[in-house]
Image (cartoon, rainbow, N blue to C red; front, side):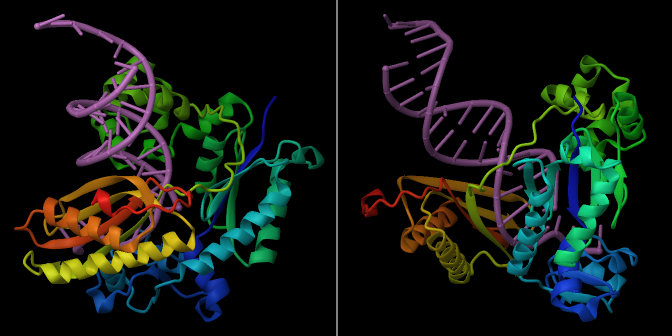
Length: 366
DNA sequence: TCTGGGGTCCTAGGACCC
DNA sequence: TCTGGGGTCCTAGGACCC
């Protein structure tokens, strides 16, 4: 019994929220969400680019300095995460109304899967339902989205990307149609195949999903190892995972990274300690706000040569004490960093999170 | 063009316990 | 004295995603 799964993806989400909700005067203009380019000297990257900005060659992940050079007239907005979070909730609320039962899975802040097998019985064709959903999202959130429809999540996700913005792409339902659809696409069209895997496959002469479709698992093994079975199935559009509600998100970690405006000389110890303490305070605030405690602290250090290391330490009992967090973080930094290298970035992460409200004194563990 | 910040999941070795 | 496996926790690193 075939299923119908929709993958709904907001178009240029952060940029669209800025244009259509936060700053209507930016509609029709190139918009980059990200850090201040500081006249071309900023160190951040673009988080999201409106379609007008994309027309100038700007894309997400591009250094803001380059984006600024390509289009100095673009609006550079350092957005507020909260407005995106609110918009996301509104959009998920709309989807929930269309999903069969609880068959909705939030994949990230701007995309979700819904199963609509039953709902589709009332429609001439699944695309008619998709159009209705798209229109409802636009009416209620003022945000554009694209929808992919297929018999499973993996193919639906690929489909969405084929036709953006405000697109609807339908694939299926039979196996031949699915394989034909995937055949010409590059291997990185598959969600889960990133830069490294693409490189490894390309080095073996594998560029397209069609090539993989014509291979056996043993033939795939030299390039993919344990991942061979998985890729073998995905390249053919096989994905049996049931679409289930992934429930309330249980947070696994909270982190804060800071790239300095300029690399910090290794002997500027006070400055570095200060930066670490400030980040610890921010993390601690978030922990308390969510009534969470941590057991593990990880410090990330990136040097001027971009080499990045992470070192962590755990304590036996969870805590949310800011002073303990600061002491652990500073301690790891002092003992594990390379004292000769200028520092580009420091990051602090807490994990091993729990809600257990235990009153314990932890000083003895330090 | 020099390369952010927030996450998740997986692997693998060593310690330690039974 | 030498030798098993299995399970869990900790640490480090890698790949990936938005």
